[in-house]
Image (cartoon, rainbow, N blue to C red):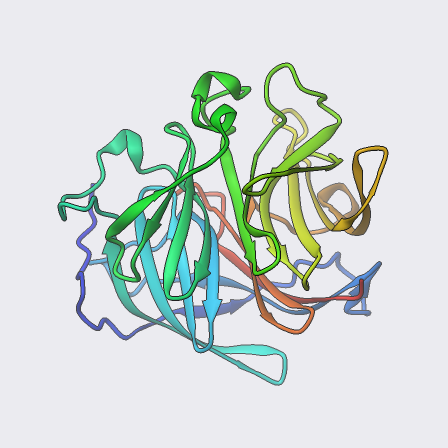
Length: 304
């Protein structure tokens, strides 16, 4: 595989930001349902044949740094500049392999990193195939394990090994929360279950849960996606879930937006989500290193 990462060295590679309007053709308003698309673009690094930036599955932001995670076990650190609700610059500064405490690279079967959140200069990363949450420093070196619910540690409890811990988020009130992409085997398939340290929270599922991010103390923005192999239809659902409002064991939730490719939305495999300002978020798509797929970055505002 042609990839040479320059670890711990400043790269300063400027991403190409290619205008890519995800809205249906002819839609003049930037606002749709309870979101407003502020900016959307395709990311390219075609000029740099010594590094690959692709298969981005998660984002974490602390101004001006944007951390992006590849599900092949690579961590990228960007400088992000947002000006007048536009992404004006995205510069790749450093790239790292995720490593064990010993400093050796994670073995292939342990690299399927899918979710990430930044807490006090440490990255909590959730994994599929070998489901777990590990804590890393900002250079991608593992610091320690994070204890998760027993049922989440067994890959046999998931619908497939590739439907494990796709999303993770953090708030001071709830601590680390994580969730499987699909409900566990034997559970109610109509409900996603969010696991906090000592409690579970349920909300009605629309499709596969790929990312979560706190809006405020109690409310979580969730990203759900579906893809029909036969029709090639993609649907993205952005939902607000209030962990403090529970009725009959289920949290109050509402759909903020449903983006449907059959309605003209130009979508891809969105998996990563991070907050960049009050009610403002970035989401990114995993291109699966596919010729017909793109790495899309979308800046949007929600109206919860």
